[in-house]
Length: 311
Image (cartoon, rainbow, N blue to C red; front, top):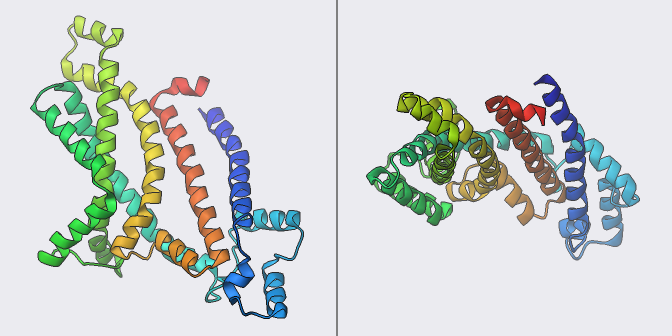
């Protein structure tokens, strides 16, 4: 197991370099000059030259690339072009809101989707299965921003149970502000998890070793939870890892709906203000999340099925 973990960690290194390279060149091939975008079309050539020198844009491309890699690996992103604030501080203020939202939504998806998917598979074609499929259909069909607006109208505007906008100050106030955004993303993830768990468990229940266990008189609950569900969790874990990345990107929309001061709101603000350095740093952070989630998904699958470490 330790050897597998070390091997996966080593495989992350070229992945990180590839992702950083894609981010670097994606921003360089975008139309427009960052200096003109920041200073305006009527800026003097001297002001543009000084600004490009400040950002290092007057250096050869290979020097810009190695400087970008070094800054990314040391988390030294410089200062914002818009207000001069250190980008590290801006990210440090925004990240807790985004991470807490993603973790809360994932928790809701697991707590609701996993048991519901297992029960619908066990009671296939019954009333519970019909309810589960309806739940999944609604979850997939309802856009998260529209669902978030509905929650705001009902539970904030009319019932006044939850605050309308913002991220809150202090632990309990932040939890109060987190409920509706987490439900918005979490129920969609629950629908995905339920469908994936149901399909995977139904496939496992058809296998020979499950029929053999039943033929030996093993109690049905042990057949389901000890023999079938564990093997069914491997594709579920992989699918949830992929969907968690979708949830992270979905936080941008939800943060805008609920005006949460998270990474998505910060990145959209940077795009609107044409803050080149802030957008670059935000993309690097999102890319880092992709790498970490993929790594954790592989390690979790190996923990569920140790045979994976032998491949």
